[in-house]
Image (cartoon, rainbow, N blue to C red; front, side, top):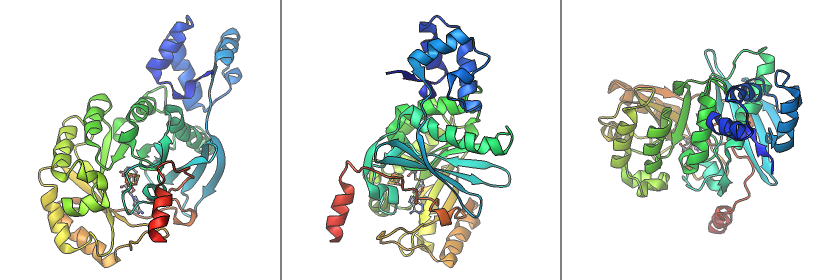
Length: 360
Ligand code: SAH
Ligand code: SF4
């Protein structure tokens, strides 16, 4: 099997080249071609000696996922469907805003965690993405967008908020982060790369040591009783431990706050009393809130909170001194909104079958 250079961080690439008797500067050169110029054909890498290009071609590849489709929303949001292996595909979304362009990428095919309001969770789990598959999403988006902007960097932010729980695919994710942050890779600053987690605590402590980037935590409930139901991993790592872990993370994080994501579900977690409980819950943690209107999907069993409930909830948090944003839903017409990313999952966890049984 040829080595796929798309998935090697600088250190791994340097070591690979060293074994071939090549100097470390070649790693920088290759990374630039692959990640910045979006080149996958060694023959086109014109400032690399021909003999070396031929040698590379015989033992290595730059293998990117296969592009199945691209959709553009009326609001400029774009979505790519990428095939990883037969039957398994993932979605990647680009959200343009005035000051920035955010790419939302996936870390797993499906998710094993089964949060009850999440369509990815509903689809079950197939497997972790490889480093190359995680980076492959950025590679495609960069190439597709880069052409339009004539070389300007249009992806300013990357968020791991697509399919999957990034901290349950820890090794591949931290290696992919290396490539995103590398000056010869995608050159993003730590502040502009966000890992979103539902709270896999031991791995969060490891991320803190290895590659502290901006942190978002999917909170969704102010009490353990409710969070146990909505985000089942809470049964293992309850709120008190989660808050303590957030504080440990903040000691080294590139931003001095955690973003708590809170999906607004009508009659479930959106009351005024719950807003006040939430203030208690995060006491002592430097944070902002991002309220996300629930995006419905078939048979979800939940409804989106009414706009006035969202407003009241937001006002209570703001009056207590918190910065609160209400996420605008983007790309709805192409099913690219939060929690709508579906891809195609060959469900090995049998969750789809179990759910169907329960509903029958
Ligand atoms: N597994 C990680 C990252 C992916 S989910 C995590 O849970 O944080 C990205 C965000 O979308 C999370 O905050 C998640 O709770 C939210 N989300 C999931 N389903 C949603 C839905 N149907 N509507 C709105 N947001 C949703
Ligand atoms: Fe997995 Fe995140 Fe969805 Fe929960 S919200 S099922 S952790 S992708």
